[in-house]
Amino acid sequence: MRQIILDTETTGLEVQEGHRVIEIGCVELVNRRPTENRFHAYLNPERKIDDGAMEVHGIKNEFLLDKPHFAEIAQDLLEFVRGAELIIHNAPFDTGFLDAEFARLDPAWAGIATQCTVLDTLQLARKMHPGQKNNLDALCKRYNVDNTQRSLHGALLDAEILADVYLAMTGGQVKLSLDTLTAEPGQPQATRFTPISSQRPRLRVIPPSMEEVAAHQQRLQAIAKSAGGVCVWQQLSQAESE
Image (tube, rainbow, N blue to C red; front, side):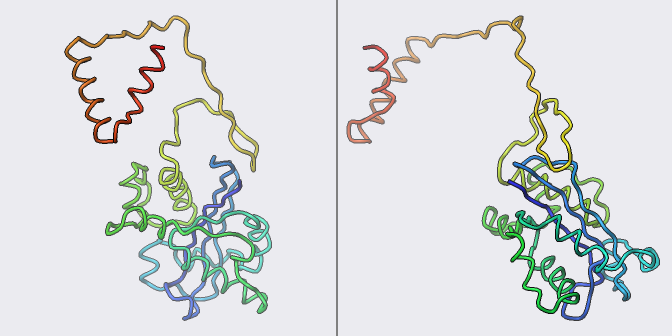
């Protein structure tokens, strides 16, 4: 399973007003493991950046003057994401801008969703945490994802952070503090497991007291009564004693 975490930065908020993409960042997951495969590009938008947008991402017009135009990276980007599942926070925003960029090159462009499936983590978060803040910073706090480097928005940095958030949202603990082997780009990370030492002391087993056993049996009987005479734990105990 190949997934691409994607984020963009733009010259402004409204694609209908002719605003353009100025940065694209993509992080690859294969079988839910990050690889070293990345796609990152700054772009010359051929227009000025709104002051409000500049305050968010800190990218200045002068910095982009010598950067490639979208047409120069479009094919590489398409090849990178084609056939994968795109994972995007507030997906309509990013896909709307990307579709507008591709449509400038090909008026018959049918949309990025024809090349990939798209998962919107904002919609997913709203279903999982209704009535709460679900922006990326709030999700980082909720899932204990380190975002201390995120003083300003950046497409690649935000994609890397979103990858950690997405894995935490959909699979619980994802970092097991195990040594990992370096994988080739595009391949899942291999995990090296360290066997438990044979010198490890045996765990202590503390048997229950007679009072605790009696209380346990009373509880099982109460469960059986409320369940119409059926208690799975009693059945298991009887099977083990037979």
